[in-house]
Image (cartoon, rainbow, N blue to C red; front, top):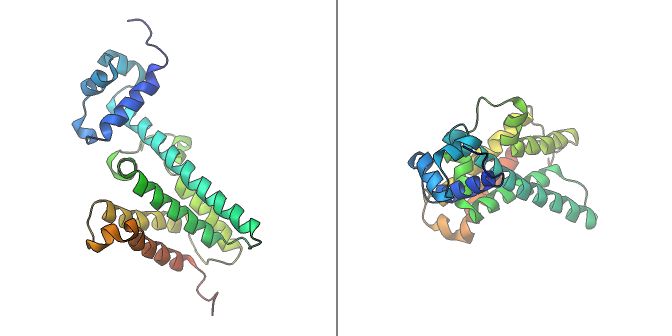
Length: 213
């Protein structure tokens, strides 16, 4: 077989993501992917050793899109505070990041479900690649470290606390997306009322206990 066209790899990813928007990963075969791409299974295997490796690459692409959205929102929040003469507040930066994560998830529910639940991470990947799976947590940890240094938080384990914040908020987001909470919270402010409460709870847990006493 001759070498496949070099532009086929992104097409395979894009078309497979289209399939994943409609079906669960376990419902999709390599033959399904090949048919959707207008290629042969042999061609698919030229680029990806198996279906799982293709799904992992798709997950990373989706994570990069989500992380870019979150970081842009946080940086916008920082610029806005500086422009209005307000002092830097790492806790509010974390809030901006959590709200951005929530807003992205509500705007892209299927992609968020794929990233957070449906598609597995490559647990055998090298450390540098693993960092890409958890870029948002690393970003949140960096901000929380700053909150500790500046006296806004007394977190003893910023990596753990950053991870828990995202996990807790995702639980609330997923409850809204899957209609697994009290019905009135499915639609109240588009699910923001319910998730804002979770954001308030996790931020309160991070704040220095005696700061406002």
